[in-house]
Length: 179
Image 1 (cartoon, rainbow, N blue to C red):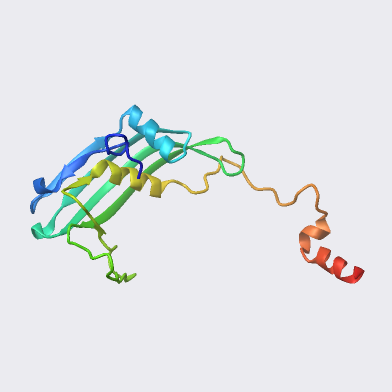
Image 2: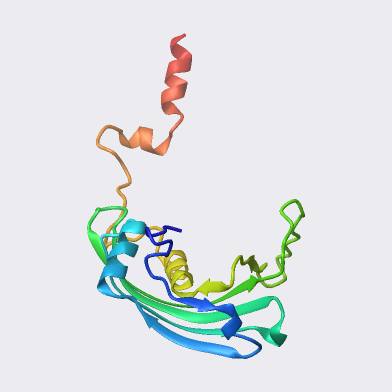
């Protein structure tokens, strides 16, 4: 997480947890042009044209568990891994994120079961940054290997013959017989 000089993130929308009680909190957020520019720098993207999201935050039974359900929407520009051209990408993803206000001793073990929901992320303090949650979900939804339409990796380099391409051990066999 990148913090601004005032201690906030690029797209900060804090929610005080004492306002949550046992009910729900619904919110829609949209990042400004300066916020999307700062996030593009953070995520090493040529650009983020838009970022918005809808969130529902619940605290069941006023206990330590906080459930954030949401949808993130974005228009981003990424770099093609083959041609290095800029590629437009549209993102629309739903997510559920769990948090807990319960104290968690640093030296204790955490058991994670693949069948259970995600382990809640521990919170410190009395607020939850909903803008940062949307920014993190955007980062998770980005295509790790964006490609321009029709871009493909070549199958052979100019320095290899077709025989070497088919048999990668041909060169080793040649060296073995020389000695």
